[in-house]
Image (cartoon, rainbow, N blue to C red; front, side, top):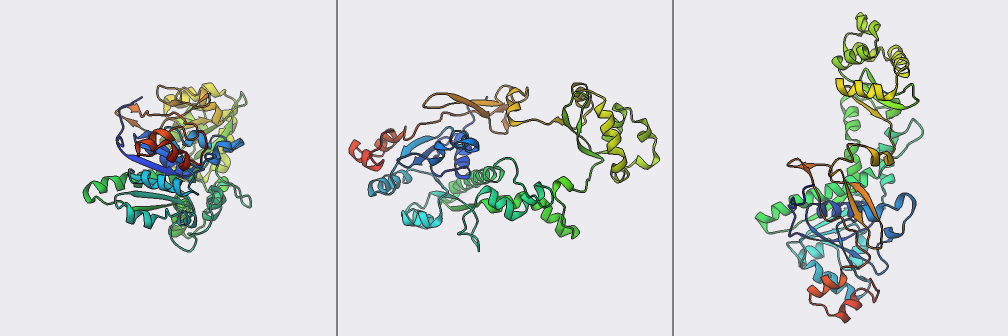
Length: 392
């Protein structure tokens, strides 16, 4: 784990956001070395109290951040925020435009007051007819056609993770870093707006372009027209589901050899990929029968040795036993301020052969309020007023 790779060391980010898109942007910046100060209301970020599938939102996407408690409904709280922003390089937020305007923190006002500040606003939509609509990950997946492409006809289905939110946070972090690089030359900040809808639109762009080029609306993925000879889920002799792919002529030959399907190798009508794709109706049942006669472990070893794409059908919890995930640096452990800990993936890249590490502590509500606000010159009475008189 590379603890030394901190390209954003010395950059101060003030984050005022909740749920996933804004917090994930802050998390990416924190893991790259930035000091990320999360501003929370007196009762704390509401995602701290979510259960079920919402339970991981706060602990996962707020790792490595400091927490400052401010009551922005008060003059003292807003004054403290202004002092904090005066020391910041980046402001990350995901409030509705009207809410920011009411509290006096709309981007244009902040840009005029702090011309070097980079303001990264994470919204449902970019500027345009929908800019004031309320959006959720599921809403934009339905709007863009991603849900249509994921479920079978008549049963649109969101993908099984908050993919658009996380991609939105990644887009925000990317453009923030680009703006920081440019600021070195210009000395000026920017107002950045990241759209949840537009991130989802990028995810369906391949299907849009297929329609643009061919004039054909692609069917949902469960009913797609295959571009590969084998690209399917099969059952093994030991009752395990596996995915197997053969996407080139050489992989087709290798797979047929492994499964002893000599009749396919000799068939003059199965010598090219287009022929193999055209014949899927008759070949796939035979491939399925051959796989059903073998155990998963035997198949996995043969496939890996010979370069055949394959995978078990895993659950997310299975990743805690996966040897590749458990390699050094694959998971990082976060300590929760009020007790306990959890493991979560590192950032998905290596630098000089090592995974990137960083501060993964999860702070309690307002844990850093006194340290950070006192450094801005506030005394104990002013700090208590700014945080709404709540204990951290």
